[in-house]
Image 1 (cartoon, rainbow, N blue to C red):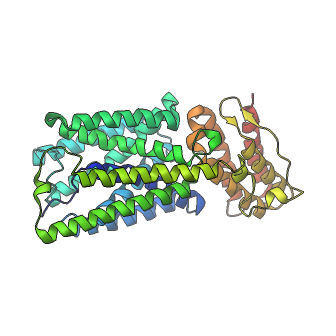
Image 2: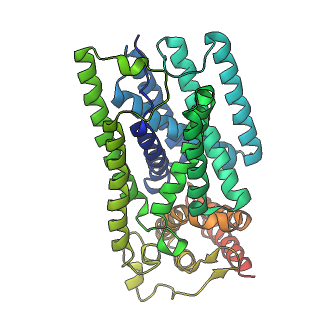
Image 3: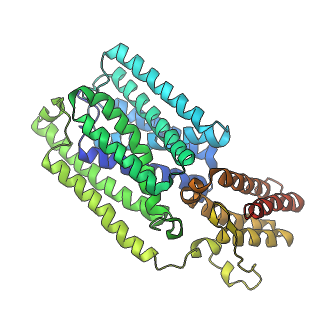
Length: 410
């Protein structure tokens, strides 16, 4: 086989960082917005990933669209594995970060003993490819855990996170140009792209009131995906032309390089597109009233309903203004009190979507307070979504949620 992975260029790193954000937001969309839940979403993604890896393994050469499809799916899977350990099993991020670091060391150790190299310039046997994808999956899981740990333990937030991880990523690229450091620097950079991509994505998606640019997950994902499609299509055309002309010299080069001028130009064009279009959309989003996207229900009629609860100011001592969430909670409470459990179930979906969308902005401010309120919201969701919900059980769960919300006001 010829090498089954792309030459590491500037275009490679741009696609890698953008694919991280697309993978994470798409998984959240399936889980929360579509309502599949974490179990169904995890199962679906792993099945599709397995099919994509079979397709990748069956190819005898590097095929850009197959390779990057696998990277996006591995990005989702690595994130889901970490989230499952943290959110479902309650494993500490300190433990999961250590666990994945040890697991990656094991993968590298076995890989090196079998092949006497960890270089990705010659992934040209089935065994080397298996080691490569095993390492890729582990780096995504480690990057997710380490990034979340840094965000929570240090309360970085996405702005500081983007600066910190971006600076560390640039340092690894400098070390990557040093021959003795090429292999460890590459894998360190690969790990860092996961929290870096997440921080950049959060910076674009979070509401202006939380310090973001207010694009929202959907518009950010569409923008990133469009840039990825263009860059991967260009890679596909270049790979096809290279095969036809028999040009393989670029793949035999062992030196670290960000590619030819054309690679740098395409990568720069992708970054300019993200910054330019993102800034333009952000300016439009800034004209919308703060909190308007979470106060109304999914049909947009709650604010017009004269019987709907009046807005009240709710401010957490550490999380900040929670008024928009309190308005939804009051509305769910009112519908539950009337016995309209179906309406309450539909309305609390808006709370779930809004709370999930604001996680990156709220959680770093006070992880403990965020987790306490998140658990209370989960309790209300579980009660209203039970197979046979009762008004008493739903009211109890909602009282717990209201009590938690009030407690955080001091």
